[in-house]
Length: 352
Image (cartoon, rainbow, N blue to C red):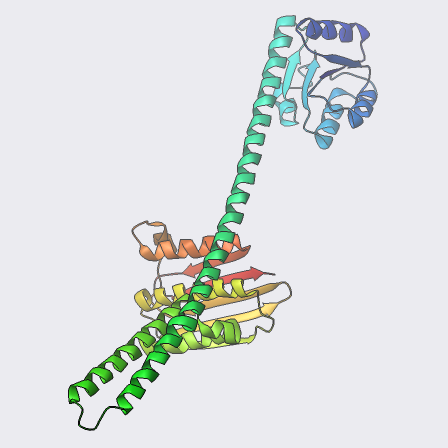
């Protein structure tokens, strides 16, 4: 629908029939005030307005329309000296036509404006669909991550409840068997039993290690702070890098799956520190504020230029990218700050 606004009845008639004959649906209005009143409840695609009108001229009408909607506006005037084309376009006009107007020029301008509008609407629809699909994919990815963690947890429990208990039972049975061997039994029998027990102990140790990687027991027993303490202690024993922990202000636990994600993030960052930083100290800070959990890990190592992480050949860059995306799926902010020779700081803000 096109709304023609002009205080000159004859001009309204001419414009109306030019557009009507070209197949457009049109309405007419004799003033800017009447046009605005109509537009309040009756949106149209295009307004064609004369500039020189009493009470409310076309420029004021243009400004009022653009404040209230995205309706396209073509201005018409014979006074181009007072109303330069570039100025009207800057004010929001979608086109500007100088009187006298030919039918062919009017139709050409209207077609162009409406085609541009249609293309913009199509682009907006496509972008909205893309955003909706992206939101669905993010939700699916987040759910997939949660399911993966739940599967890890269940698998770790299965290892503990079945394999762990069976290994313990086997060790007990072998001990009983060893205790009932006759004194004159072949010494090889004792060695075989002892070798078997050693294999069981070794298998049990490997099983505990696998369970720890799948689901740290400390996380279930003591929460995120307890798991980080256990991991930091093992990290120091393994690497010689001291870890300073400041987590007293973390009082109310996040959901279990979210704490698991933060723990996985910690593992990745600590691994990168051990491999690349040459640090002697790592500082961990975890606190809770209203509506937010702030977590940071800083090291005093040799630092680096964060831009290198965009290089696909850098494996650490892939790990950081994975961390960033996983946190984004949980509505968490991730920031990495580092400079050569200045160490590195990772900051995470997790919103409740």
